[in-house]
Image (cartoon, rainbow, N blue to C red; front, side, top):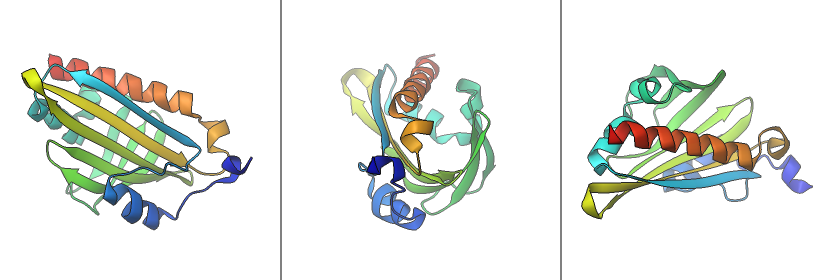
Amino acid sequence: MSALFYRGPSLDDLHTEYAAKGRIDERAPVTSSSSVVVNAPVERVWALLSDLRGWPGWYPEYQVLDLGVMAPGERFRWKLGGLKITSRFAVVEPRRELTWSGVVFGYRAVDRHLLEPLDGGRTRVTMSESLAGLFASVLYGTDKLRQGHDRYLAALKAAAEN
């Protein structure tokens, strides 16, 4: 029952103590981690992932609304479907990790993308996320989050392999 009311740490603590340290809030009621192996080098995968303005070209559900410099601490606004999200970059390590914290309707999230070069010019991409807020598990749920990640990773794989 307490998971229904878990709001997680403050957004500032979530950003500095979790996202900036390359981790999600494991106590959050909604968490997911999915991976895919992409038959493309890490440089190609990073180029797609880090081109936020280009996201709609391979994943139409994402659209960047406001983006300045892509650097730790910098904010950006984007849409996931019809939801407007305000996020702040936490880790921007080219060809390795892109992590941010964010908030939508009072729900706090950490999104982490980890890239791992593999033999044969392949790349493993792991996407992890935590989502906390009142009734988060009822309103959104882990299965829905995982399904969204799987669609996103499949689209990233297809774009990188083309």
